[in-house]
Image (cartoon, helix red, strand yellow):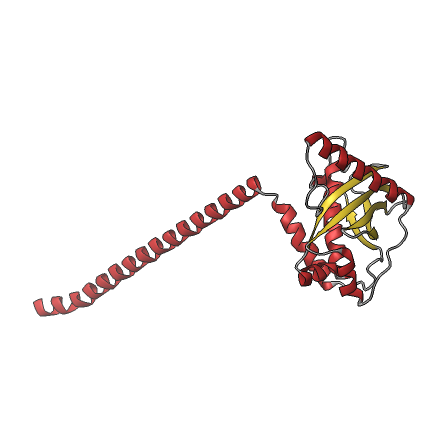
Amino acid sequence: MLVHHIRAGAPRTAEVEQSMLDELQLREEDQLERSQAGEREMLLCALGGLLLLLFSCLDVWYFLRGVVVVVQAWFQPPVWDVLAEQSVPGRVLPHDLDYMGHMNNARYLRECDFARFHHYMRNGICKALRTLGATMVVGASTIRYRRSLAFGEAFDLRTRIVAWDDKSFFVEQRFVSQGDGFISAVMLCRQNVLRSNPESILQLLCKRKVECPDYPEDLQHWISFISASSQALRAQSGLVDKTGAQEDKDK
């Protein structure tokens, strides 16, 4: 009877040991899962903190929008005519609004920045600048608001190079309402070329000398205005422009 009892108890002991092993394995798996969940939670918190820091210190949407503009221009067909007008569609979104429910004044200039970049990507000026080791900066800009753009309103932002001199391109940009074709705002911008000049850029792109169009009357008055303003400011500051590379560094 004793032998039979021992023999009968052996399987039970094995079952108990297997049960204990299974329970131990489950505990280890549970601990591992909790540890991995904790690591994921810490990683998400770190990413959240990093994003919060970036959005607090940088205009992240500006840089993301810049990437989108580059990608869009990259996949669109090139524009071989450097003087051709290009149009970029837009719409007034909630983050564009001011307290009166209109597109705020600063957004117009921001949209113009992206439209010019898109313009230069497609007509090859960006590529020419890289080839020549040059760059462009805004030397002056003036915008005239004619009618506000309302929330949800669609518009076309039309950009074209109007003329140039030995240092700068002169660019005109128009906000045209898609509803009735009204020009809601118009901006003139002087793009100063550093470490090169407009003639070299156009020669590289067109493989020939490109004649500058006649200056429109409003552009002539505007150039006179910014020249007079620059001279007055230098006189008030007691400064003399010795480099001649850039009359104004105001943006």
